Length: 331
Ligand SMILES: CC(C)CC(=O)SCCNC(=O)CCNC(=O)[C@H](O)C(C)(C)COP(=O)(O)OP(=O)(O)OC[C@H]1O[C@@H](n2cnc3c(N)ncnc32)[C@H](O)[C@@H]1OP(=O)(O)O
Ligand SMILES: Nc1ncnc2c1ncn2[C@@H]1O[C@H](COP(=O)(O)OP(=O)(O)OP(=O)(O)O)[C@@H](O)[C@H]1O
Ligand SMILES: O=C(O)CCC(=O)C(=O)O
Ligand SMILES: [Fe+2]
Ligand SMILES: [Mg+2]
Image (cartoon, rainbow, N blue to C red; front, side, top):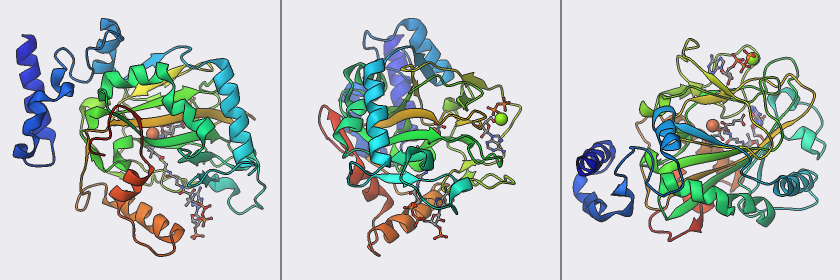
């Protein structure tokens, strides 16, 4: 029955692929197709059967105390220095919360709700290469691993308009590469995160669905740039608040619907994350798909950033992605 599960899995994969099946003949001998038991996880000796089953069914697993206090303190220190512009990292993107956009900018971590693309900062990027994280990542991506997207989220105390919320979304909306099952996010709490300061909220099991249409939520106080949410979000769907301690890490599937509530405390709630993909993934053309809206927003921003030079949505990803293990075979 293990063989028939593998065959079924291969059939499912081929059906999901956005390119002709003759292009993927080599998949038959692909190491990733050795997924004989679960659909979403590989048999690697690391995950217990319970953990595998949990990821298969829920689309995420939470590992307690995976990143050391010392490492997190170092990441916090570097974050502070980057925000103060005491160190620079080429390509770093900083984002201010909508609520403070119009006020004077002071270079301080309290003015920056999120940094992205820290792949050129050796100290923060060390997070993406931590061996204990990569061991888990490999269970989802297989041996060739790319760090595709990096973020340090610094959710500010809500200024009263609920702009600190992150609407419910699927991360795959942002990614022009496939297959989805070879992508995983690692998200590590840099302090206690709970319902009060806006922990992650997930809809378990939604990773088995398809990519949904995303758009800005119709929120009275507005939503931050590029914070799209699933259209027609069903607030009745059972949700789980992922309360975590410093160093705890959740791994989740890019189709899992998740978001975060508002920060009702006076502190800045911090988390560091990396989206990994198998280097064996391939880029897709998102023209004419539900992802066209985000692709256009990204193109507009890169156009401004690189003085009118048009950079394709795919190239903007190829350019930022970094190999962290194995071989850079495709992405
Ligand atoms: C899986 C993963 C990919 C999921 C996610 O990351 S979900 C969230 C995705 N978010 C992002 O990718 C954040 C992207 N953010 C950015 O690229 C930057 O923060 C920018 C929005 C471009 C702002 O960069 P900055 O250097 O400040 O550039 P500018 O001051 O010229 O601003 C450009 C225009 O953007 C506006 N803006 C900046 N921050 C926000 C905001 N928080 N909410 C709404 N609008 C905002 C700003 O007002 C300006 O607009 P105009 O004045 O040109 O109309
Ligand atoms: N219309 C919507 N579209 C998309 N996402 C939404 C919508 N409404 C709420 N959310 C998101 O759902 C999640 C839960 O938010 P909500 O504010 O209801 O609860 P919470 O802040 O997590 O907890 P509490 O019930 O204690 O306030 C958050 O990620 C929020 O951004
Ligand atoms: O830390 C958070 O609030 C979640 C952010 C998130 O899901 C994202 O940026 O894709
Ligand atoms: Fe997300
Ligand atoms: Mg709330």
